[in-house]
Length: 127
Ligand code: HEC
Image (cartoon, rainbow, N blue to C red; front, side):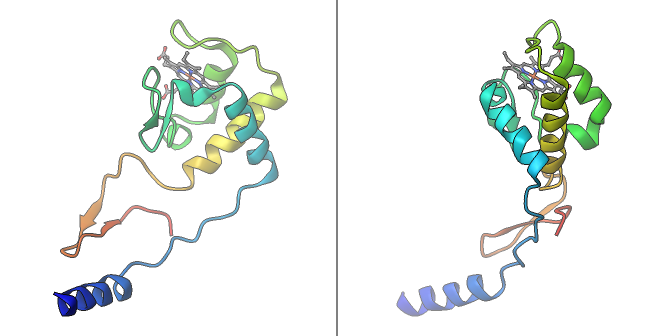
């Protein structure tokens, strides 16, 4: 049992994937994160599937829909999303933040492989 544990640990710790190299968050994106938290966007939206479920997941909204589309939604709201009457700098900061989040990965994962020892490798992850 102990030997099996030792062998398993050795395999898991030596054949794991590289830690993804992520850019640190920029100042404008950090400002956008603050706006995102202040208006509690996560109450209705999700990142990586986590959050409230009234609105869509925003992890990849920038690459899937584009910054102009996202900006229009944030500036005007819709029948189901409130218009927060945000200022132009707040909206730009939010777009910076959503662009940063978009660069951290993709959700839902489309290409992934589950290894026999239990780890999951997402093949379309930016490394
Ligand atoms: C009360 C719930 C609610 C809150 C709070 C909210 N939203 Fe939304 N949001 C929605 C809903 C619902 C939709 C989809 C609306 C539709 O399709 O008409 C949406 C759509 C969007 C979209 C377009 C997404 C897409 O894929 O079509 C963006 C971008 C967005 N919201 C950003 C934000 C940001 C940024 C905040 C915080 C400032 C925020 N939302 C706060 C409910 C909310």
